Length: 93
Image (cartoon, rainbow, N blue to C red; front, side, top):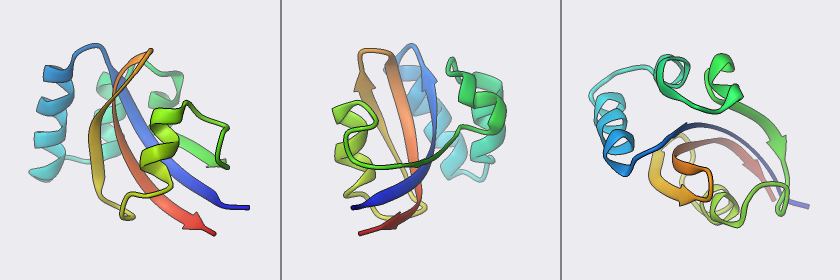
């Protein structure tokens, strides 16, 4: 079964999500941004979610995590929790 590792950060607005993405693309560290801005408890670990398989996260996550290129920031991805930036750090089929 497919498995992936990823990190994310969660904020309330799409605008804030886009601002943070711009900062990361400009050289800011993803983990530092997650620690500063993420509403998710994983933010304290730099947004690390650990390893998971399909169906273990919300469908919007699965769609991105199991299709996006590795090590590229994806988002904003909207879920019922807010707006996320995602970065897939590894994936196995």
